[in-house]
Amino acid sequence: MKKVFALLIGLFLLPLSVNAADFKEGTHYDVIKQTATEKPEVLEFFSFYCPHCFKFEPLMKTLQSELPADVTVKKNHVNFLGGNMGPEVTKAFAAADLLDVKEEVTSIIFDHIHTQRKPINGEKDILAIFEKAGVSEDEAKGALASFPVNGLASQMKRNTENFKVRGVPTLIVNGKYKVNTGSVRSTAEFVELVTFLTKKTD
Image (cartoon, rainbow, N blue to C red; front, side, top):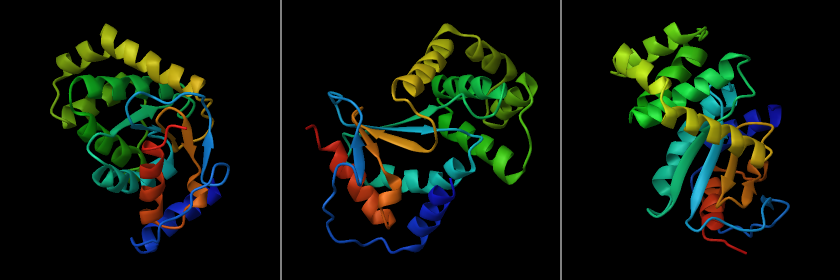
């Protein structure tokens, strides 16, 4: 985890220009599946309880702004951090997606945990977070208990298991390539590597 933190600091400090890199399997990325998704996508596994994921957010926003328009960027919350609240916060993230307040809720939860240093202890705290995002208590409760939200939360759990994700942040591109973030030296090289992988299918 110390290596990841050092990488994040380096990515923000180094300039945004970089020469075209010769990205190599086993160094810059690993092939983890035999087949790629039909359409290009970037799947970020993260946890609101992970300080490195919190620091990774600006980098992901830069990446999303630089990627071609046909590339879908998705976030997958994992359950293995946060103790008993891990799965509950995953469900909250799924509900935020359903209610179209994902960006607002993401920002509020990260701020709540890592800036204000406050715990999330149960439904009351989760409902208060949704209220800050402009969602009424009744609407939030309905979403959290809904079949689509439970289905989406279950899918995120299956994704974590299927891709054997053990640490976060982890980036999977096109369902086939895992980005080795420790191999890149700047924000620009990170963006270039991910862009390269979105176009790769072999």
